[in-house]
Image 1 (cartoon, each protein chain N blue to C red):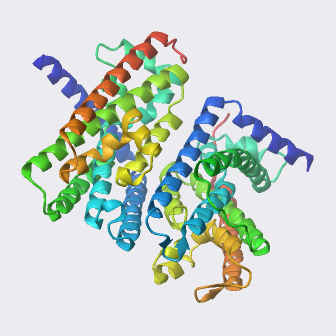
Image 2 (image 1 turned 45 degrees about the vertical axis):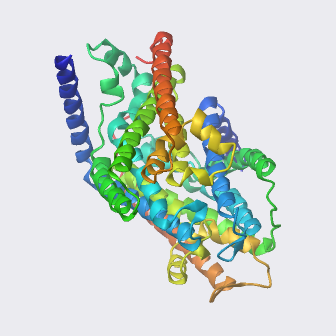
Length: 264
Length: 266
């Protein structure tokens, strides 16, 4: 077991090193990408300032609390991109037949197609987001060690949901050869997580909490930090994320059985 | 003219070759509009006013801005950069048509498809939210700003694609442009909600002319032609100026790029 973990860790580091070297080839691109990502971060920060600054306690949240929702979204979203960037490059692998070669390798394909392209640019943004999130978290007086621990556990749970969504995108990529729009639909839906989820009305809130659990993924960690989650909500979030994860693995198995090697 | 109709028709048909791709693209457009509506509806749930906007005027702005942005921003020009990089551009250069008109026709086809489906999506939104939509008040100036917005967007997009003549790193400048476009053109909120100095600084850039000003002008009464301390005529002058600047830069980059362009066999 330990040897297997060591083997996959070595493979992951190797693929990540390759991915970083590829990114470093385009130096001008790094500058533009980082600039664009910072523009996006600054814009939404400003947007939240406009909405929550003008309207004190909009949705029952102060500006500091609203920013914490936004920063938590950034932490989860960026961590998912650091880990799963390779998913965005899956379609050409299916179309060209390269995916066949990956399936023939003696390791699990996820190490290559899911985790095999770590994003160094997003990694450099992840830590500032995390530090900012902690900075705003400690500005809220009701924070305890337990609420902070719950916050990080639910961020982990959010990442499990993100993993499931990325596996679903890969499976749909095999079944339909369509990846670009499905991954962007996932990204579009997560946009809602930039704001506290209770500002949305039903049925949207229900759908995006229980069916497509963006709310559990993005808003539950800050809820836990503010002490707003009941024990039942914790249980519900873990049950839903586990169901989604196992469901995504089932879909992946189904897609592999249907795979007919499109490319080549 | 007949050849441009053929280009228009072929471009429309291209969308229906990859049907799933097309459907998913429309789903994305709908989701984005839905999120925006839910967000602003929530903002106005307890407070009837936000800045100078009532719920009706804000939702009207969102609807008109989305209609106009779908029209203005619909473009096929990003593919040009790839064609320059892999040499396929030579196929377009050999055609007996003006390159600028050829791509403008393709853009018009893209806009037509966009608009056709967007109206169905909008109808769904109207059914869901029952917004009290304001009627357009300043159609003449609105159309002038809209045409200028289309042209500024087209030339700016061409210019970005022509970067491909000098570098293969064509996607990252466009990504930065898209981010700027998304945030400072007024797609999330009307730009006049920004502090006045930022708003006036922005009005010196081409961004508000893409679709914020066409929308705002369309929804503003003809008797209220002042936008803060700036008149509608001054803004119209700036929009024509930006059409000229972007056209000149695109033309300049095209000529220079063609001179420096070389390719190896096909």
